[in-house]
Amino acid sequence: MQILKIQNPSRSKIQDPSQKKQLSLVDGGKCIDESNPPTASSRLLLRRLQTPLLAQAAAGSRMSREGLTFNSSSRALAKHTRFMSTASPGATQTMASANSPPPEKLAPEAGLGAQDAMKLFIQHGVGRRKLNEIAAEKGKTPLVERWQKMVATYIETQCHVITLLGYTPDERGIGLYTQHLQQALASASPEVQDMLRIAGRDTYRMVLANAFGLPLMEEQESKGELSIVDARNIMHKVSLRMQAPEVLEKVAKICSTSTAMNDSPEAQQIDMARKHTVIQQVMVDDVYLAGGSSSLVSECGFGEGEDGYVKLQFQLAEHQGDPLISQYVGSAMLKLMEAAGIDLAALQQQAQAQA
Figure (spheres, rainbow, N blue to C red):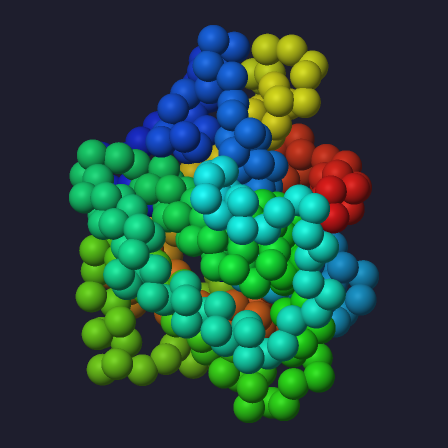
C-alpha cells in the first residue's frame, strides 16, 4: 500500500518550494521552521516519513535484479510502517526502561495478542478518538494531511502496544518487534501465519474506515474480497501511470529547489519529508484521481474522489504482500524518487545505521 492521498472537491495545492515553512504533520500539524524547532518525537516522525516509500523502492530495486524474489522483512516494514509516526514520550516510555534489555524473540501468540490490543485501542481507546477527530476534518483538511495523521495514529498506537511486550516505543522498538515477528512467522504453521496476516490486515482496515468515516467494514462483508487478478491489474495500471513522463516531470520540477535553510540533519530531514509529501500528493492528484469521472479510481469501479480512493486502498490491503504487486509499485516508486532527487542508496545506508 502506498501512502497516497487525495483531495476532492477542494484540492490542496502542493506547497510552493520557495516557502520557508514546511508542513510536517507532526505535533498536531504545526509548521516547522527555525523559530519552531522539531521536538524529539517530531524528529522521529520525520525519519519515519520516508520508510514506506523507501521500502517500496527498495523492494523494486531488489526485484529488478532478482526477479520476483520478495524480501519478507521489507514486506513487513512496508506493512507495519506504511504510515509514519511515533509515540509521544510519557507513561509508556517508563514501561520499557532504557536499562532493561529488549526481548530476544517473540512468540506468534504474542503477535496475535498485539493485534488484538491494537484493535481494542482503535475501537475503544485514545486511538479511536484521534481517528474520529481526523474524520471530522473531512472537507476542511486535505486528504494527504489527514492520511499522514492517520498513519501517525496507527504507529503511535502500535508503539504503546509493543511497549507492553518490552520493546521501546520508538523507531528501534518497532524495527526490532517487526524483525522478531518475521522470525516467529518463519517457524509458525501456515494456519498461524494466515491468522497473523488477517489480523494485521483487519487492524489496518479498521484504522482506515474510522479515519475517513466510511462504512467500509460493513461493505466488505457483503461484497467480498478483490481478486488477486484484479488487484494485480489495477496496480499494473497504477505503476504505468506513475512512470508517465508528465508525472515524473511534475515531481522533478516541484522538488528541484531545496527548501533546507541550512545543512543541519534536521533541516535535511524536513526537506526530505517535503519531497516525500510531494510524491504522495502527485500520486493522488495525477495518478489515481486525474480525470475526474474518468480517473483511474473510477475506471476500476470504486467511484470518484476521496471516497473512491479510500475504498480502493481498503480493498488492496488483502494483497499488500503480493510479490508481483510489490514489484510493480517498487519499480515505479524508484523512478519517482529519482525524479524527486532522493538518493535511495543514502537512505538505505541511513536506515541500516539506525537499525
